[in-house]
Amino acid sequence: MTIRVCVAGATGWAGSALSKGIFAAPDMELVAGISRSQAGKALGDVLGIIGLGAPVFATTDEGLESKPDVFVEYTKPSVAKDNILSALKGGAHVVVGTSGLSDDDYREIDEVAGEVRRGVLAVGNFALTAVLLQKFAEMAAKYIPHWEIIDYAHSGKIDAPSGTARELADRLSKIRESQLDVPLETMQGPRESRGVRLNGSQVHSVRLPGYVISVDAIFGMPDQKLVIRHESGTSAEPYVDGALLAIRKISRLVGVHHGLDRVMEF
Image 1 (cartoon, rainbow, N blue to C red):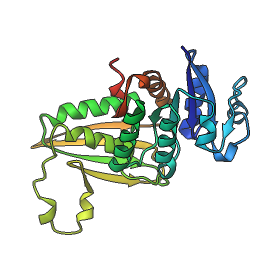
Image 2: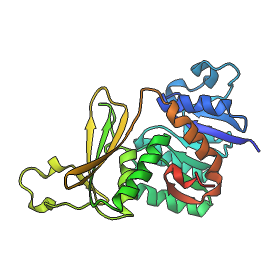
Image 3: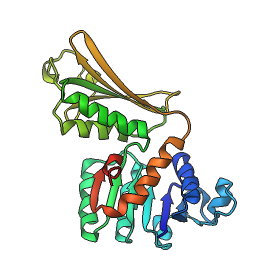
Image 4: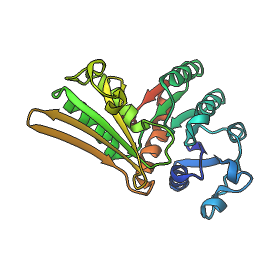
């Protein structure tokens, strides 16, 4: 059975790489792309792919008229929630690559997904090395009570912390909260200098030119430390295989789920 896919943000940095991957996949059909700046064109003409005739629409509602089985959200935090809710109500499962949505946003999305019996898989980072970082950090947190997370991204990234860092903090909270030898309420100096307390972890966000997306999970013990790092290059290619896997497996889920490993085992 061919999976019909609509990609919101199909001409962006990550969305264009994924669109090419979907077009090349023998079990998928890219039926529509969403991009306000390229609306009215054929996606193949925009991306330089011969034979890709999927139309580009300006809005999610227009794209959903193509009746996709899976809707991929790769746009901006300001419009992502509305796109996801529209896709669910239109009968599609949803794979989310956009970061910046809050816990409250996902609670609302989960309620709608449950009502329509569709799955939503939110992945902070589709790269295999990011998934392994999360797994290794969970292992370390069982043995080392002190850790902090440093989240790096380019200077133009508007959401902080990144989806990768948020997902990591959420996962570690299932193990335990990180230990602070000096509680935040008793520290001297601006509390912001210690980052944000997010789901029991201290998270620091660095936004500078020269970075793409990187995350450090730093664990400390007396006279020793463990640093686990995921670091992206300038290409979006590392995210394609993970996103294709999510598209293939999302129909087995109902409600909101987080993390690519949620579908890696089946």
